[in-house]
Length: 284
Image (cartoon, rainbow, N blue to C red; front, side, top):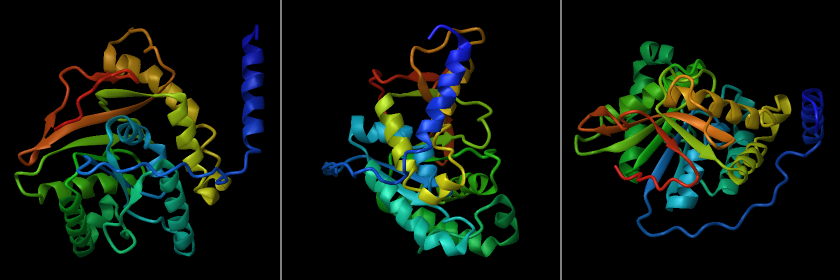
């Protein structure tokens, strides 16, 4: 390769070839043995597929730190006819990543949005209570969920739901909260987490088990570009203006806090870069 024109042309050709890969056809890896009393991380995913899109840090914690990762699909989307199918797709995606699936309600909740929180408090209180019960049951070290301005109403609603549930937990409960981004960038992320090629390819493969979703919009193919751009943004946002790029290709941005004594506390003084070589202490 000796020109940027060739670089662009070959990028487009790679995308064309990738579109021919049939989704949801990968073989499942062996199930990982679960250690007794393994620390727990819970993903509160607004929809089936969000557990893959923002599954990079949970997957690293599972593989590197022996975490038990439990995915909670907060809703199953608005298409009633697709819900049984989406549960099956979700189970396959989580099976590929060795994530567990648990429902806070019978099969997720309805109308988890900021507007519904105001207009239907009875439904919201029910969802909050069930979310509390699930957190109480699993006693997670870490919770993963979207940030409060992530544009999509259900993403914003999921943020409110988790924080409302945390406010109802006993004062003795503490955990690390990891807010993620997808539809809109975080205002003030404080952590850039590296993902290596194996994790990125596994997340894309798992994402394709949501077959109908990626057939409708092949966003799995733009996933690496998003992760690359996160490193561009995060290198200066987490570091300093004019700082050089971090020495890795793929990354995810998060706002990470400590929830303790009923309120959020800063987790980092000046932000954090967590590379694949980091020996980061995730204990609360």
